[in-house]
Length: 84
Image (cartoon, rainbow, N blue to C red; front, side, top):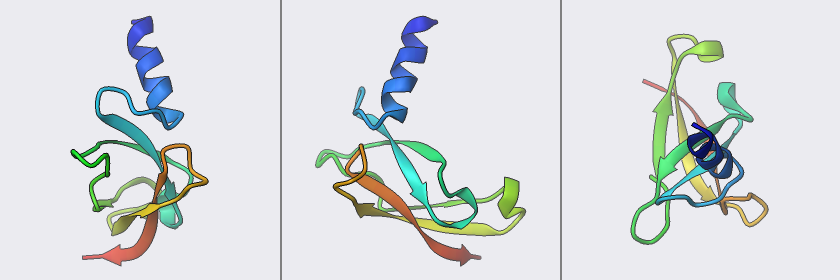
């Protein structure tokens, strides 16, 4: 169990572990949360994703991957806005 927790902690800290990493969400209803994603061959995350629930209610919100040298993972997901 401790090994699994350590792996999650490393991903949340922005370290690539086993091809996946935690990326900070910036803006929108999920601001400040971290999403763990699988990286592609070029070490890039999926270009965008949609999320809903919690503070967002039933409304879908789109986030787009943006390079960010200041972020531990080198990327952030920026809020694009509500989507259908």
